[in-house]
Length: 203
Image (tube, rainbow, N blue to C red; front, side, top):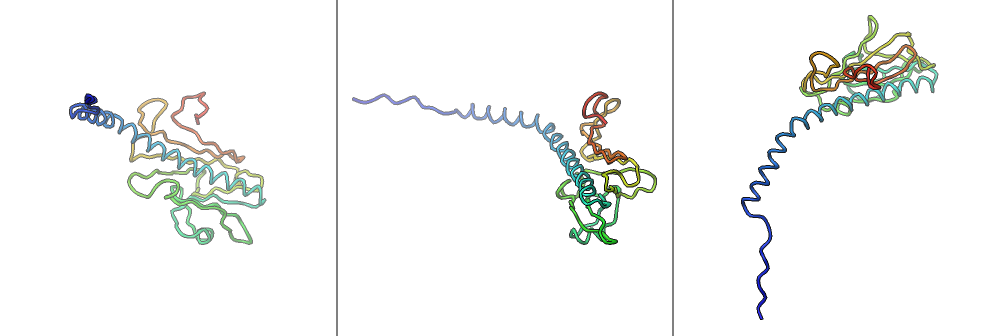
């Protein structure tokens, strides 16, 4: 006795086209948001890298009980060459932590832009450090973990090629820019300039 054929299963061509079209529309709608998310992640990652470096400099100054520098620089090379030949720059894309030793410096840790900010280019994250008059991009911690010159410093981290920074009031862009603040006593804090007063992320 012959068995009846089982009903065919699967998708028709029309169903498949409708499904592909819906996926395409959803991807098109989500692409801008995903792009903004990725650019904001780059800012956040760079902030974390610089914050970690500054914290390392402070910790090493206390541990070694000697002046330790956190220097922003565009110089490249080995850790040893940067420890003796790096040129400070307040908008440096790289940084080095170096400790005073015998009239010179020894390297503690270094980071290149490729590690913290992505490869250099139009879409790279930008860093701009500020401090008292004459600041050249070098922060110096003393053996107590305070700033050697008793001054405050801050580092703004932006991504202008991806858009303007978000703001708590007034014109606001899509990028959640960050700021690292270093107080005269060596307290290090990362904050969001766009966060409203009272928010734990506010500067």
